[in-house]
Length: 161
Image (cartoon, rainbow, N blue to C red; front, side, top):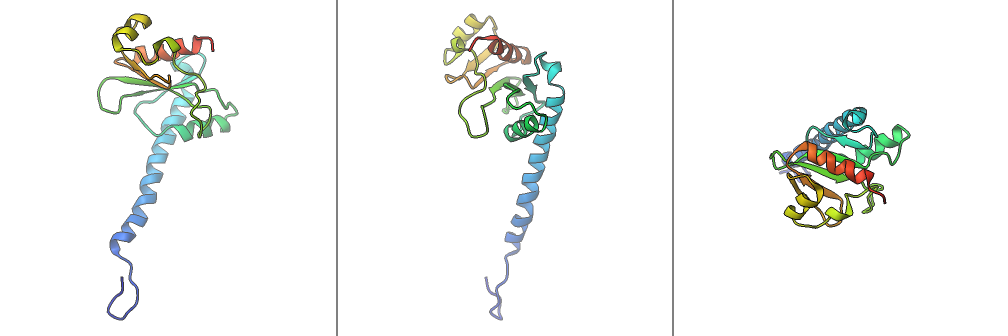
């Protein structure tokens, strides 16, 4: 935009976006990073192997997991993360950690016998009445309780590859 003397002037709206966007991104990154650090430091309280992280709330965890593993010289250790369903319900999700940031391959997937079957069959096969689903590719699943989501991760860790 040009003012009356022909010189360019910047829109005040544009300035606010330039200032707001980096602050917004940094704040969300920092919140996620702090959650991942907390979960990493308490991972042996979640499960004895230390391969499962539990988040108090959903967050953008992936990049931070890889960075924290590298910083702690334990790349590839974390296999699953647990977090409450984003929809605000009481459900929990268990998600497999991919081999690296750009990969679609999981370090460990959810059990093969659970993948892509109906909720009813999943409950019968798993022995967990409150399971909800397991994606056909085995990268994510859900249950109504934290205990069942944790059990899904633990049983999957114990499954032979």
